[in-house]
Figure 1 (cartoon, rainbow, N blue to C red):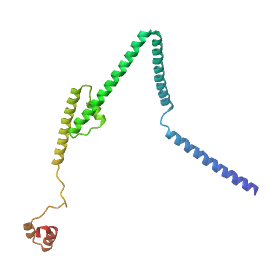
Figure 2 (figure 1 turned 180 degrees about the horizontal axis):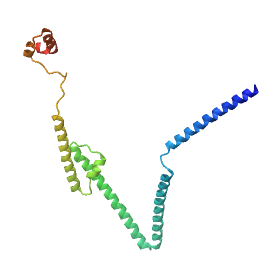
Figure 3 (figure 1 turned 45 degrees about the horizontal axis):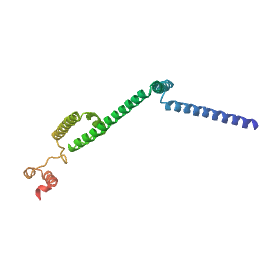
Figure 4 (figure 1 turned 90 degrees about the horizontal axis):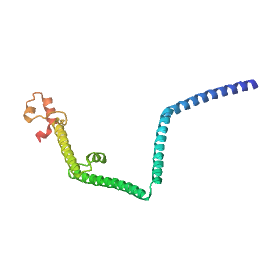
Length: 192
């Protein structure tokens, strides 16, 4: 009896180890399917990020070195130039935002509601060129809409009910009595 218990226990262990192996194989296959990047892809991404970080740090070191070599007058001029550059960028951004708002209003007056992506394509630094772009776009848009509507109207209209209507005279000319009665029932509104 002890031998029977050992044999059955060994068989159970073998079955559980086989199912464990298949489960671990299934898990490793699932993990392989979940991988979105290969090791080479990750290495390239990390190398690119590291190179970018390294170049930024090098710029900071160069900037600090340049500042230490300058005298007070040169430092003041340098800081003034940096502030002027930032001011110019802010003015440019502000002007572009104002132009975008104006362009949005111009399009709204024409009945066109545009998204930011379209507006960014139409808006320029110059007010005159932005107005010209908006006017041109409005003309082209309206022409395209008009063309699409005209084309849609040219298509045949579907008939309601699928049958053509008969007149009273046509119904009375039907010789067969049952067919004539059926036609009268289908077109009862002619006889009211």
